[in-house]
Length: 182
Image (cartoon, rainbow, N blue to C red; front, side, top):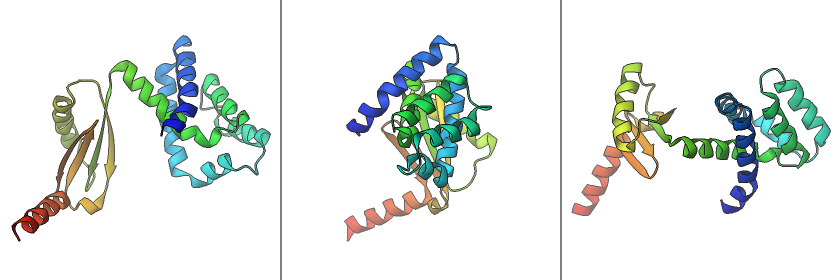
């Protein structure tokens, strides 16, 4: 990952500085999350942007047409810059690094909650309170995921801490305990 960080960090840091100077940080962060969702949901988009066959001007024109109405001019400039420098294939890594830097600056902890089924709003609120205690901060961003293979319950990842309250985790731990006894 160090090589990838060497590529992505300068773009992320510069873009964050530009967003701060223009008072667009919150807007840019929201837009980054939306673009990351699109990037992850659309293999066609990823492949087209990463393709060496598609010329830089064609990529820039496509980006302009797709995003000119939805993104701030500075964000669109970042996309075009990445296309110019043949780095648009690293867009997801640049945006993820941008979000990491933003969280570091604002002391925001990222928690990933993977549950077997969708959590109700009450369950989310109760879990949020408990995660805030674990993380030691009120500033918390939660990423919710669903994985039916958990059978029931949830897994919480906050930094290096993992809390496995899933049924599949309990079965696995029970199996390990039984294996030790045998």
